[in-house]
Length: 143
View 1 (cartoon, rainbow, N blue to C red):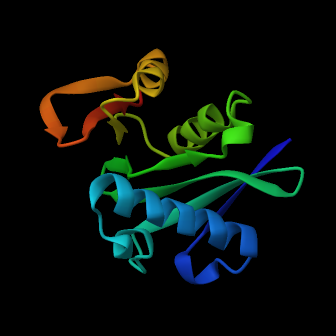
View 2 (cartoon, one colour):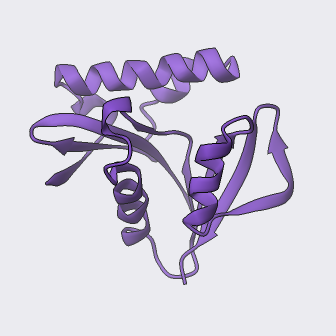
């Protein structure tokens, strides 16, 4: 059974949660020449959502709570947990927390056709003119 835990950065104390957060920071640096400080931001607008299965962290995401848009800079599922519904559960979890007519926005690496197809299958829509160097921005509105 999947369980969800929402934490602020300063509340992350468990070793497996810290390890997953570090993996996410490494992803930002490696893939986007990004600033790891984004991942470790203490801003009140960021929430860190961890998914556990059998007492083990199997996935996480960061939610950037911008007004009526919830931006997901990265949704991460452990390789060995892919295909078990963890990503879908995280997306559903975010949608259950937003109001009608609000939007969830995220980016997908351009070369990851399989993942892009998965998000399109979840009814996410690409922005027509917006993409960043390595990613395509997608959005989905809660009806």
